[in-house]
Length: 459
Image 1 (cartoon, rainbow, N blue to C red):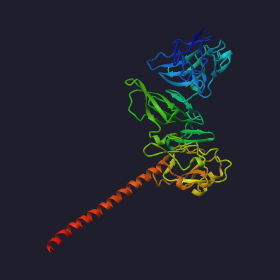
Image 2: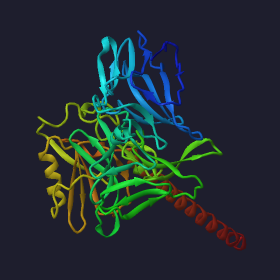
Image 3: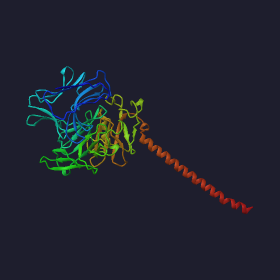
Image 4: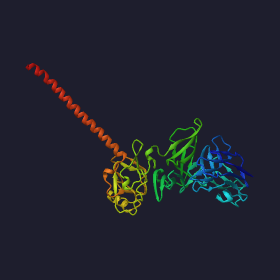
């Protein structure tokens, strides 16, 4: 059986609702436009679960990405995309996008000239049909309903109710900045959120079970994220921070903010809402500001303006020094007072001084910033990017240092934060001067009034 859908209209949705399973020999085709259009979307819904809405649906989609068209198999919960075959490696095609369950039981995505761009690799394993289960798991099963392939084994950026993730598994979400991405990682002693940039990996949130208990897997339950050990005993959980009547439906790692949320469906508002979020303030987000920007107490971004165009900065809050620091000999570390970072990497050194920490960054040409914590351990953290920077209370015991070309004047080290402080100083000084002058004027007037009667009596 073959269904061919032409999708040349802008924002056109082609829905082929089919509540039965997809069997061997099934084939559906979406036409791909000849010319690129950023607003185009072609989609055919193929199968869905027999549940109250919002229910799960599987679809074949053609979408524009960076000047090309991707062909993918997707799973939706209502209007929320919860799984995508091309999440890590998009299949780009032209002319057509084809989904076929071959007679040998292999589910394939094909493009022009029958070129295979994605497959399940289940040929010859007795696959009989493709199903979507009530928990959103897309599965290939044999005649005995034994699962031969399932989407739950290939997590993307969403974890569904009832889904388990083992240690060393992670969810990944790609930000608009192509050089960075977020990840939610399950480790033996904790779960954590990471910002990944090249070879650098920075954590910005974590949760650890008490008493140093080890994690074997995590599972999303109706009320929260549950942690289990190797004996399948629950050892910890993250519960909803709201009192909700509806069960949780999914956990998601946001691609815009990098925040982790647990979501339920609100029948009254007819939309999904967050019952829990790992980070609740703007400045705790890893990319709340652009590189070389500071997130202030007012949750606004202020650029570090100590670098001007003549010093190598392309623009305020730019990506950094033109050409980087490798090959430059004349560099130094500049301290930013009242500034810290939400990002943490493994400390390069402990039990060292602030000066030694600065030297470690100076000696590594790929290091652009350092954070020194003067606690009991004297920890030194190095950074390959100036990101996640925020204003902090003074006296926290940490010092944030940025690498700059040598000779950069401290007077140039002006950020919006320092301008704000300067403005406050000017205002306060002005009030003091006004108060002094007012007091002096009042004194002179009182003195003059006292002298007037004396003059009259003498006369």
